Length: 306
Figure (cartoon, rainbow, N blue to C red):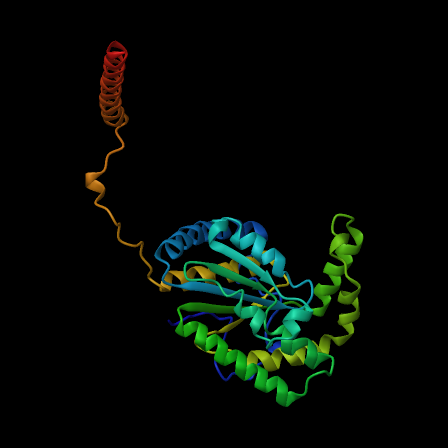
């Protein structure tokens, strides 16, 4: 399946995030210009997901990564709010639990991989198991590269088993992160999102940039491509990602499964059903009455004999 997008990272590309815009608007002037487009994408996703769910031939795994405040939660809420919840699952990956830490680093992600017919969304993902350790000096470059090789192999295995993998890096500027954090401080309704860790991690911004560049350079492949999405403008981020997801699902050319019965032989005519039910009920009533008479006669004969 060939994917065309200006945000696609082609395999073996040496990524430098400074070369990618964070505030691209894709020709749109404002959020109002994208409202109609996003609404259309949601409708298309709803229709496409219905076929995906019914056919049970493919699964779709969407990976969302980005700096703190990049908008992973918002992406999920704005793009996938219109699809059937029965066909979508979201998994978040934070610091491994004691049980998860005793397994290989991909174990917890494999357990959350969507089944065929489902859309799965990773809000942060297996890449966190390289990203944070590298940034904080707890993993050397050789081990990080080996982990990335394992990730490539794992994603290839998923693709071989009909799981379509799309990976999105939500690219925001340091200045935009500053504005979003300040907005959370200023708005009482958003203060619940505040975390001391978000502020502590800001000083590692350059290291995170370098770590992400390494990840994007070595783990974008045809079977599991990365897209660097300009995300300073939330409304454009949503349109850009939803367009890629719609195009990908269309390219699968899925169809509804063939019916197991001939619809022409079925009827939902209430009169016919009621009429048939009434005949059967009347027949059962007559049979019950005959049985009761037989029992009465039998009882009478017994009493007369006495």
